[in-house]
Image (tube, rainbow, N blue to C red):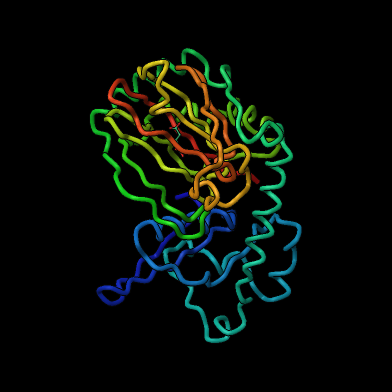
Length: 313
Ligand SMILES: O=C(O)CCC(=O)C(=O)O
């Protein structure tokens, strides 16, 4: 994500900070939405997008920008470091943002995911061969290391749209991946296998994944779907010392609510399935479409996972 986008800060007034998101020609609409979601998470109010350009290679938009006098270079920083100053005419003639562009791109991708093998299986599958036992050992070693400095994340659910802009309530430790996880995350073999499972092309959402640590009684992640730009998630279980007869700390998913708003799940009464994934196995889920959660950990044991997000196209 950071490779795709420049964010130019502008100090503004003390409580009125503005930021201009500048697309590189290869940035996707989902990447813009991901940045917007991150700003919302940080407590900023995000106004309407000033302009959204589809990828230059998107056939729907081929030639359009040129006819209108817009070039990809209008939307990116100049390589010599100077910023192009937009003329008054640019500002008044730039195509107005169309929410429908975003919705239609996302809807088509969502449909491809729903039609793919994982979608047809209810939104998730448990795989025991996509991450090899040797890779799992390396991830586990790295996770133990990162765990020493993992940050605690605590907070209640913040509802925004009963969907991908919501912030789920949580209590867990989290830390960034390292070289071992990076290798798995960006492995062309892994990406190609996951893409086949999902029935559409995937690419890492960002440069790095994370490790999550459910280690204290009550640690959990409330019902949510993953943020925009993170359409598919690969959760690899690296450690699980919770009692076999206790679902605390387990991943659960509302497969009957695939593609639905979170409100129904939050009202309660909708059955969830506990995902049985032993240590070493990976859960591949359509995290942007499938409501899921981690149940509060009981008083014994803990669970550590590697979490990798992928954008679908
Ligand atoms: O820990 C898990 O099994 C799931 C984590 C999760 O839901 C997420 O990272 O979005």
